[in-house]
Image (cartoon, rainbow, N blue to C red; front, top):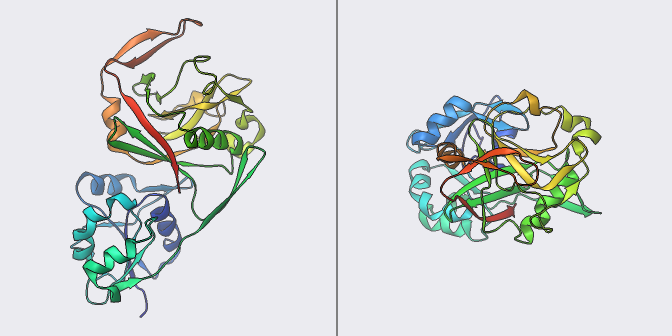
Length: 306
């Protein structure tokens, strides 16, 4: 069967790779399955992949019904809740390909759709650790998952090709669970969200590394727009642990801070945090004035997922 139409369910890291690849195939009609606010956001903003915005069609499961190929690229924990959407999408000749971490995802989908519809598949990524740096190859970038208040999640994609030292530091601290159970310390509406802010409070956290915006021209070229993730620091150093998420474009940040990646989903939670009540605070050592949430917003867990 010749594939003429493809629907992608899940536009995270793996789904974005599929969107990127199939966008180069004009003979294939490509759509992302989404509903409600997520569908509206995708139609408006598209998908940001490697610094470029892609605008695939956005389909409801009903509109995507009987598509030639359905690529399921969800987080494994979401699979059971989306089986009905998969069922609505699958027609008589639809082939379903699962690119999920769960080893039994194909079996679960097969029980609902019939194993004759499921195409066994594998997506593989490799990374190499060398003197604290992560030299990354493959078709899937590392993803950091931030859990807020035990339920909401934000994901950002790491760019180790332009910041191997800082990305390696963040990945190692996440693996050691150093970020877990810490309140969001700084929140500047319209500017940045910074989970960690104070210097010198915890020697496991207060790590300074080489500022890669100085050593890597490609890093320095990144334009700070909404959703860019970068490392705090000073003109001589970049924090190897204190990352922040930009809430709006900011020219004054351009070329002055090490960029490590960009948010790929979790915008609903970021938008919620942007509207929480904040209060003014003063950093005791430097006298720096900043803002923090009045009601504690807790980062309960930070993990590197593939």
